[in-house]
Amino acid sequence: MTAPVFILTRPQMGENIGAAARAMLNFGLEEMRVVAPRDGWPNPKAVAMASGAGRLLERAGLFGDLPAALADCTRVYATTARGRDLTKPVLTPEAAMVEARAHINAGGRVAVLFGPERAGLENDDLALASAVISVPVNPAFPSLNLAQCVLLTGYEWARAQGIGVPGALAAMAAPDMATGIEVARLGDHFEEKLTAAGYFFPDDKAPVMKRTLRSMLARLDLTRADVQTLHGILRQMARGWRS
Image (tube, rainbow, N blue to C red; front, top):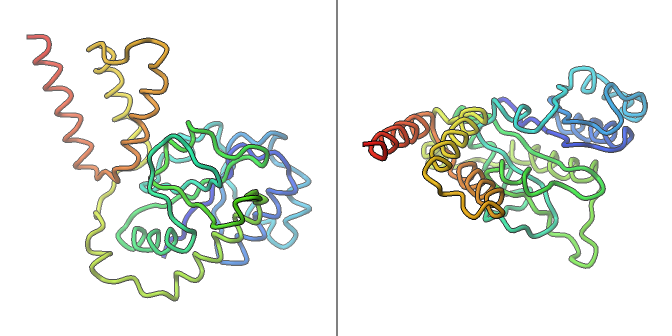
């Protein structure tokens, strides 16, 4: 079975990247992607901290932005400890990894996002996610170290391999899910047509409206057929507006 890819978004300390690699390998997770690391890449401090898990860092993908790192993914989970303005399903690590297993069994590609150590994922990052993973920790002290969060999620992924997923759940999963880049292009198409129609008004609210649109599309778990249908609807509606 293909395991989820763990994506470290704008990580700040090499030591935390190395510790995250060790935590991943503890539970058989070997695909890491690193997005815009603060201190550059490769990072000697990450290598030193990774110890026996150095091969994960050697094979880690380096990306300049998050949409590029998600281009081939069909379901995305974002880890966060804080409430946000966007409407997303919120799951425990256990529930998320059981769901991820079913999605992968159905042919999907799963990613789990982890944010920078100081402030976590931003709203623009969360807008690209299908669902949120939130660890039920002490509300008076919810902060988790990056490697701790990776460890918890990896542990639940390993546990999910021993938990039978009901056949009906796997059967309901779409067999040909849209990838991140396909959903992003659909979002571009929506923005293009809605801009032409004057939807994004007033101007000062346009960024939030666009982010909400992207968030909604990410949350829908669209198939490739869904994406093509929506592209066709947008093209036909645009023709109607011009007539």
